[in-house]
Image (cartoon, rainbow, N blue to C red):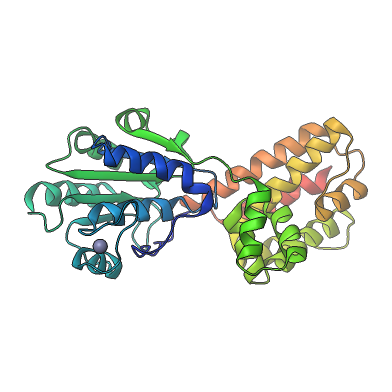
Length: 330
Ligand SMILES: [Zn+2]
């Protein structure tokens, strides 16, 4: 989900799970083979925008040391302040969830007309899937032949949703899912207690920055309460509309993600007979031991649609109600 992400400062480092792709990019850059249209993709909550920002910083820096921007030169300082004239950030504006054609047109106009202060111009398109069809089409020609020395860096957690014509014009780099053990080690090296890291990683299903978010606030309690809410409906102890309304005030994409994860767990258990590691899923499994596989898959799919609906005009309270109604009917 787009939310006008901060621009990483040039001295920010990539995350450990970015290293492989980063080294590949740096090697191509060193050999002057870095493509001008770059699509970086990863699973959710893996900090792909951070990687894109680090790359932009490295390209714009005039005194870069090996694979890192210096953080001190004029280009780095302007980049960090968000006012570098050769850096273009294309992301949904505050009141919108999509990148609009007007934004792309303005960018295409500026990139061809203005002179460079740095040795190149860099555009960050984030998240790339937020471009609507018209916006994506308007970017095609520039992706193919950017004016002068320019790099267009797209980042996406859902590259399959991009137009095929966009994907085919970019060189694609996929960040592989981070190995849980490596992420847990990274957390403990950063001073987190191992006994807290493990449950956060389990609840985050290995999504590293989601686990980091869980470790910082009360989201694990919120998650548990969402689980309790729909379990109460199954037991006839709670009112469906009250529960749906209570979810609207929470971080809605996360609620949908959790519902999807729990239903995936239930489906897996139906197939394998194994107990769920997640305590909420295990409680659901015990409360409804014969939950039909088909329904759990259907509910998982509804949850994913709800997650995507954040970009549309649909009312979230009604979508939560529909989901809970389907859940309650079994
Ligand atoms: Zn610099």
